[in-house]
Figure 1: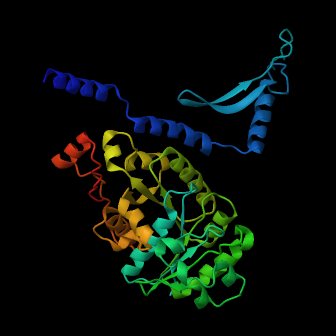
Figure 2: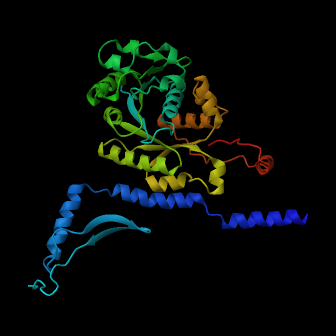
Figure 3: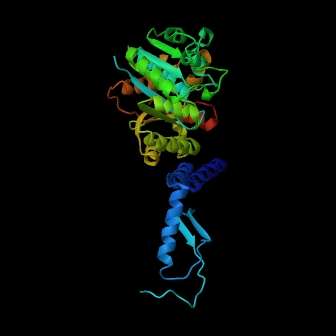
Length: 96
Length: 272
């Protein structure tokens, strides 16, 4: 009898700890679908990159060849990641 | 007469497109509509076996399109529904044997004669898919509540939107109510919130679907089968009836629970 009670308690604890895999599925899919839908054509990415380069180079002397420019997943967010190498720190473009 | 041409598609293979096509077609014919179902999966013919018509094939879709036979020669009449016809896929050709214009022309001709022209679309998003989508005016997407199927369904929905088809409708197939109850399978709300499309129907996982296919008699003939009843309701909705969606529930009576506890497979589902 005691054994049985212990078993019952274990069952309950097990149920509590156990995650619902459907929530995991839904959350993962949310991100995957967002990424899929956002799949911008390479030309669009390229023109966005050029425009960003233009804006940044108004203020800084930067490498035209972006080291990194991509949309990717960061935990629960979709982020645009861009690393741009600043070429000459001491010679900032004068802001007009 | 001006019939409706509907493509049944999914992206991912193996989610039940062919089963859905056979059952919706049969269901519509049972309601007295004139229906032709076309297997557009050239090279991977299947709709004929699901409908139990594989022994009657003489000519196929490619023969018809290439003018090697007349329209009525390529149409196989169903065994039980006299207003239901199948145009089978060619088995020994590849999907580039036909082009979108040819299929569009054929469907336009069939629309004159039938209330419904249903196309069973091949899996994937290549030429076969493009052919079927180009010829269709409406689309039904079939998915299962699994991550891979839903992801592919979303991709297909995107492609259908750019093909300017009417808002696609969704069938969620093979829902396992026990798993949904346990929180281990996405339910219709989860799927709808992800895909943002209207639901046409919910079909429970049902062994009868498989036994029916074994026999070559679509499960929709068996109104006592949960999946059969679900497909009949789907056919009614396609046909314009307002049939409310029913939740798929497991029979969670004391006996079923007991069976579950002692490990007897009591997977009897009440229907949706």
